[in-house]
Length: 494
Image 1 (tube, one colour):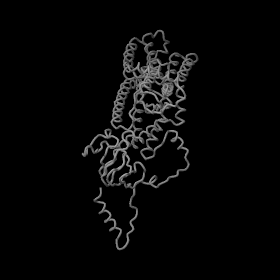
Image 2 (image 1 turned 180 degrees about the horizontal axis):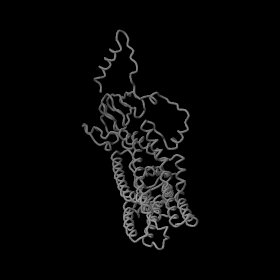
Image 3 (image 1 turned 60 degrees about the vertical axis):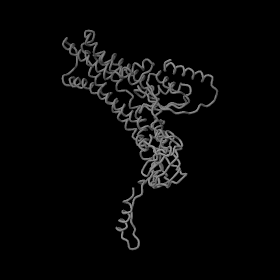
Image 4 (image 1 turned 90 degrees about the horizontal axis):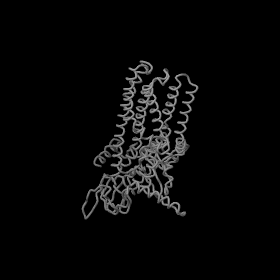
């Protein structure tokens, strides 16, 4: 049986369970998925609605800025994947955000996609810019003679090549949306550029059926639109990449390996291979690799990454230590009490990711608007074309097509869907870099209304580490002698 059929059967079983269910509460399990093929903000509501209809799903929140959707509820991954694919998109389970290799792999994939978009942009603009320059310098791009028909036919075929290479993803996305009885940004772009190209080819092949004043070709518009939108997508991808800097810094606090004591020997192993109750040796200057309890030794640990307090904390047998904190002075042996995703640092990384993906009230409002945006734009484009066709000057047909295409293209709701989630991601990320953890997007939006802040310790608003500000000598010592003695003692310290 195929995976799709299995998922389909699982979805049907879930519907049957729902119809026979009592009032028992399902456990909340949160899983993040990466969605591919979501081209604009209008896709957000469509994907969320498809998931909400799945039995067992208690909530679904999509972040358009980083193309991820957070699903909460008791439901299998196969059912979620099937539901999203039925809505016309590709989806896969995202990494948990605490795996450096997974993040590096995603960065590499994004970089390859960025290079692809830039190549597509260069090819499209390579044709569109000369054509536009020709139109501005020479004059109207009209078809009046057989020579012009032949020349523009060659340009039309080149434009078709641009549409197939640089714009293929727009047309595939539009077709997928059409099959699922919906519309998105790809629909607007495909309709706009496709209409311009088809009309121009009609002028070339059937010029006698078109009024002489309307024998104008619009190949440069098609090529320029595809090129500029690909450039916009590339710049958006670049901006999205920067929002994960805070997560990468937090992941950088994790140790890559741990020195485990097994059968009386110290063995260096990968951090993901450490088991609960393993004994781990941590030497001075090393990071604590897992959450644990001190079994042997005495040391001072810098916990500023967790508490903000600059002074090292003394640790003896029985005290708890936390992943990512720095062992300063002595060698200790700890017993692992939490490993992998259960460590305090992994939970902090997860909280930052969830906060970046959460929606403030203004973001939910933008999603509601964008869900109706594309259909409204298409209606306005049709009305615009009809007005020009019936009341506009000659050539009315050409003006009607240009006005409809213009409405379709300039109204793509990219910024509407990107502005809020990108702002939340950057805001939460920058705060995390400064050691401030924001619970969710709603808290971030509410923070804009703060008028007073109460802080419980000086380390929150100072440099976070002690420094010498004054030297007050006593007895017969001078200030310079005291400084020399202090420097001599410090010179042998790690």
